[in-house]
Length: 273
Image (cartoon, rainbow, N blue to C red; front, side, top):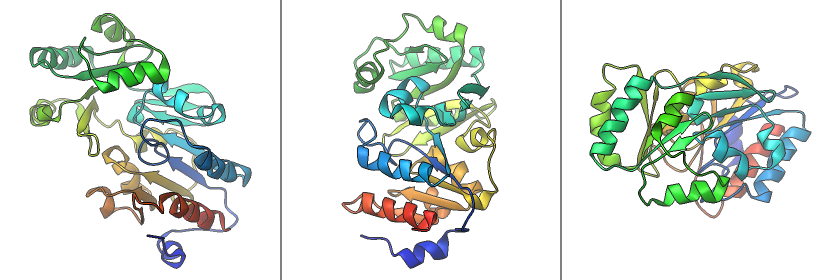
């Protein structure tokens, strides 16, 4: 269903003649089915850049899995990756937040004891058990990087988060984090979850960057790890349906045949076209 442009301009704060920052999640927002960014989406992003505005990418992906799915110029923009664990500004690491190794070891022991599928994402390495899972194969397909041979290699280098691919363990981890400086981000569409250091999220990462005032920031996302962005920033656009996000999102873009046209309409309205 096509979005009514008048409703859009009523719900978003769009000031003319101001430099704006556009914050884009990747998967389920502008990247689909794990495939590289489509040309039609890139053209819209290039329109934003050519109009003199800024783009920030805010993704739960690792840097390793972010770079291969976007054109080179996209990876050169300021970025918040690992869901906020790593912030890149002007091509340099600005901030990064690692899990405590002793807590990480406890989590790994539980996951191994219960034969779970999981992935530990580190600064330059990643590790998962020697089991078959489509995600493990996708990482190699996308990045060409194979896992390190032992979890200790990630521990030595620093780990940003643990992705638990079996959501049957969600209740256990909700109890596990109760008295620890950890947080959980549940991925509604994929039925899996990240365990990360407390207070690490996309908005906290974004706040490390030089930004305009809040009304000149426009956020596009679709899942739980976009929640703080939409809570804190008034101009928020949600893709799909997410019960928590819909409380804060000003505009909703459905996953239907009109998705791209609606996306383009939203962008053009913000740009004043």
